[in-house]
Length: 248
Figure 1: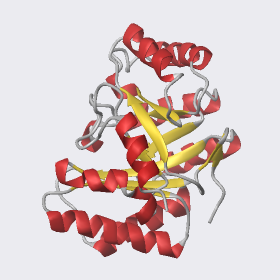
Figure 2 (figure 1 turned 180 degrees about the vertical axis):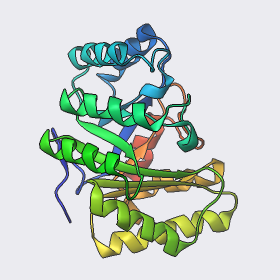
Figure 3 (figure 1 turned 60 degrees about the vertical axis):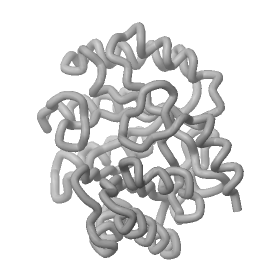
């Protein structure tokens, strides 16, 4: 399995890492939440930039990230989520890659979540910049409508693993069978030991996938601090307790 290390975090071993998304709208809200999370018992924080009220102003985004870097000292994940992948605002592809490239080149984050666009010159260049600047990448794919078949899920994770450092897939669980499908695919990928990945079943039925991630192979889970950024997230303190209880 490839080595994915970010500061003091090794995504290959020990308990799954806990990531808390920050979804504040104003600069004041965002900086306050980062200040609070500095002392929280978590591994890293995700800045969901698409919630920021001035997301379309690259200068205000980079200025805010510089302030976050001064304030917050744990690993930082930068995520600019597009509308079709569950983001808060519409962001066109050109600006999406432009802003991600600026963040990566200026090293304003330790990891970048990049939505997976296969056969795209833009994503290839962004991944090249990330490797050049030693910024780790999470390649992500979301399906808010359904849970695909096991083979489709594993194929998508394997494809993303070939490009980025960590592959992430999140699917909507509309039934108990959907949850089993996601977990079966996750276990299969775990047994193949190709690289660190994250597999999540969204929605109330999918909560079990967020807390059994060590058993089924996911290297990280997302938990809430105040506001949820995706359906099914639970509080980070409760998540921490459950992960310790289920540690094998």
